[in-house]
Image (cartoon, rainbow, N blue to C red; front, side, top):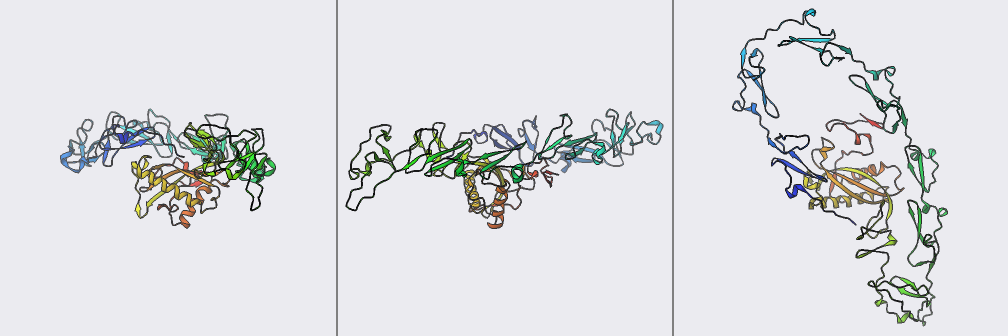
Length: 539
């Protein structure tokens, strides 16, 4: 059962302060403004509040009427305005106040101080350049050298040494990545390890390799009926007592339900729990026995039992039937024929929850005193299915086409209240379920939920069209062997066996997908850069 909460959308309510030339983008905790294409952001504080003042992008250099550069100057357009620079062979006579506005033919005559070492103090590894002004020259360290004197550049140049190329020059752990810096070097422990360096200001000096014992049976002693959970130091075996009859004492006519802290037994429909200990339910389940009469006999029940909905109530235990909130003693008929089954109202089982009853047989519980649903950590396929303990995986899928029409992201598609958003989410969730039903994971799949629809170019600059679905898949706990298979099995079926279509949704994915189980998925590479996986790391 879905729960919807009212969320304020400043973009739809027109309560935002974005510029008329900006797009308003709704967020979970507010909104942001982004100047439209061909407009420049001149907001007072762009880093904090962007898109408040967006002005048309003008090329002042395109026309002589929009700039005042000298006829012998070059006009250079900038994002905010323009600048002027005198051409080669012309001298700027007002360079400090109005550069490029007064250009006169001629050349600057500079004193040749760089040719005489006694007239400058540049380092031997620096480049001396003659300039105008009282200093007459500047110094700059050559490539391969680092400037050790920031106040007077080029006076003290030290040879740039890459300590990472020689292990004797750095103290990084052998498993760590050494990264050269202008002044020194940095060490970083690889993914899949823990940094245990003594000095927190010098990381990567001691890396402790983490081993997932659960992926290698010879490194753990968990039973085949147990779930192995990897930990930073070691592993934990959590037994599923319901998978092994020797580990539970449920009656053969009871259902064993595995829980986080053990298991519970629940008698099947048509059987009665004879155990008086509420902590030991489902250990003794007695079935109702009705003697088969002769053809001429009337069918009779034990006087101690009377029909009650789809089960039977016991007279000796003074059991009663809830009927509109009123409780009465049961009326017992001696002969089954005297009972009118049409008068027996539907029996409701479970815990009262608002105006409904939660079905305990399905594992439902009352949420917020109004709704029935699965407990935390459990999911189900539909309202008629039992709740199951699940493990969940967050995945992305890049979708580029709706039928024969290309998909294009818009802010409305990210709005959960938008009808188009609701339609695309429903079709996608149904399609993912249909796809998993065609994979080796079909028996473990429970449900899928779309978290949001995102602009794909925010993840990959080359994804200029389509939309990116971020969603969560739920599987019965222990049904997934390798976590990466929840992504690879799904994508391989869609691409190789279903012609890129997500189930029967008419939504088609791109062959270029981002695997969330690789190091590149969570890398900090620039959107215009290419990330190359390197084992558990990336480049």
